[in-house]
Image 1 (cartoon, helix red, strand yellow):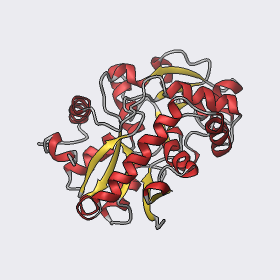
Image 2 (cartoon, one colour):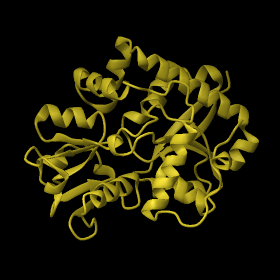
Image 3 (cartoon, helix red, strand yellow):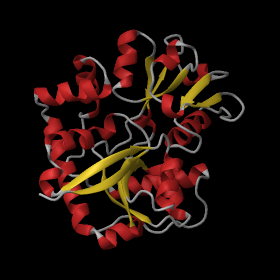
Image 4 (cartoon, one colour):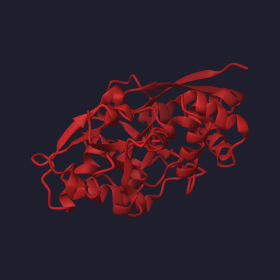
Length: 292
């Protein structure tokens, strides 16, 4: 069968990408005549620049930077949700750090300036009456994002660890979970799958096949067979029990059908406006989300 290869952009390499790699390995995409070729950019702004330059036509991203770019004219729309629909980031810190107030004067690791981590951290600190620009040191990690060794070497004192790195860091005693970010952002649409307007117009059948393969991969993950755990262990280079712990943490409430929570998206937009990340009017969510 002829297979169409589609470059699929993503801002980081962590467990939210797993359905793509697992779906490719199991043939869920190929049997539908498509194959996502994954390109990692190490930051939402970097990925969105590639979209604006038409180097990337399909991908996934945390929605805060996407909303900002869309409000500034990015020719792309949301076509679905990743399986991590609700905001499920975890802020981890060295064991001696017990509260947000203890972060004063500390180095906090984020993916990149302008990334989702940047937005979330600013809001969390402001809610505690702290000045993010004066009272903490934000440390962009780029390709080192999610590396537990950043804690062990003292490069950072706290940061947004993602799975399976979070479970690995916990198993080594490097850090503990300080808070679950989603507890501070109720009903929040986090992960979005997007496509450029041109790709939606010219290749809607390919998009339907991609989403169908993605949904099949997520459903297979929900009741993971042994090969799923083994594949994840090899992919992320962690012990099988670490990957199983990571998968369990994120599959407690998965989005199985890639559906967008429109109310959650409205809340995401509202918070972006409150943070000053977007100004003026933003197009209605109906315009931001492709309804095909």
